[in-house]
Image (cartoon, rainbow, N blue to C red):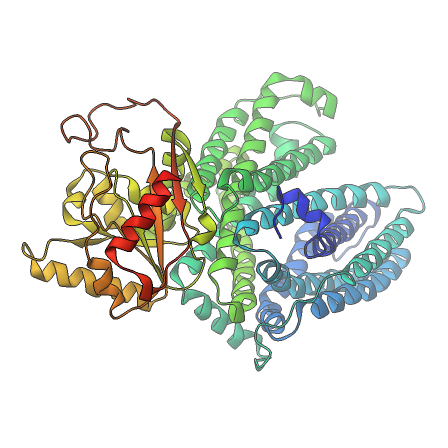
Length: 626
């Protein structure tokens, strides 16, 4: 199951056939839609479908099934084996392309519009299967890379499909026939690849299908709302589609009216945007060290805003010019800043979205995963519609296209900040991400022993004021910490720990009520199946040595006999956040420089029956020496 990087998944049957199925499906969608758009815009004169509205009508028809049928498709994906649904969807695609082929040859616009709706239905059925398939075949360490590959593949396929559709339909005399043949051929190839997709058993085979799309849509949204982190992630992904739709929809007008370029310049903007998204998606596995690292999300949001705002400044003062060819456009240095902004904002959008998709897949119950992804697709479609309406309102109010980009960039900062305050886990993981990659060079060993599901207690030596942040960075799941109440008085760190819902504890002799309240909250954490972390020394070491372990963990195990995982922080003593120089911490910044090497070692878990304070201390001491 292990692989050196995300590209190695393309050599494995559990991923490769699925990847090429979704790649070919996305490519065929866009080949067909773009060729049809060019046909009715440049080659046919249709009185009831003006060229100026053709792209809007085709886009609206394609997205309509996502609103109507996503809820039903989510149920089908939970109830039936996913390999069967994938093969059914690809067979349906062949049938649709046969009809569409006749529509191109006969230049029958109503028939082709009907096929647009049917291809939207095809994508609607495939959507929940697509994202529910991955967590059935990839483990937690592979999810980010797998999602990055899918995201990259999708945008590359969109780009290639649109380029191919535009080139084929433009062939004089035989363009429609070439498009018909290409769409049919890609659909058949997708069906061949679908046959190789491995078995993917149903996660809820007893589910009774509710065929009413309206009541089921509402039920799916309520279901997604039941998990706060998952629902906020769904909203975050939907916002990314809102953000991206603004730029994608404005490329033709932006290229023509602001950059003074021809159609080739508009295509270049699409290429830059798609490549940026793909690179950002692929970077996620490297940046996250092959975990689901939602600390990347705030970084992605920040980059999206910074470069969207800079795109406004880069494009607002460009001098008027005759219609520029691609070569003339690229030759002007001012345009390189525009392309750099576009590439970087899309790169950060890829970094922003991939961890959110992986988090949804990881945190959703398997029996409801496809339905929650269906709820995500519904909200994505709604946000894209609102995006189109919002852009229309701004343009009607007299805003220029660069000003629209500025508004969206500023709005992105506001929305992202709001989401991160609602779900502090994103912000906390971002702090942990920065600390472990800028202040420290953090290496984790034995992280496979940190459980990815179920209740457990983590015990660790206590070396510094940022031990909890480092443990957060090493865990694929949120951790609730029991911490000395005095640490909450530390500036900044105290605010972060309160934000992370750390549990303050005071000595029983000093504050019996706070002592009992801490243990009650700890038991509640375990009741909810989450991770609880304890520093059993009772305080930060003052000399770097491992102190005696107190018996608090035994008090919890009496009522909640869960596994206990020993952890050891290495080489942290002597750093800025540890107590040195007379027992004082945080007095000489960067005394060990940036990228100071520190480590965390996790050992195999102990069953509750084998746990004693002395045994735990011995395990942690052994890990420190490892």
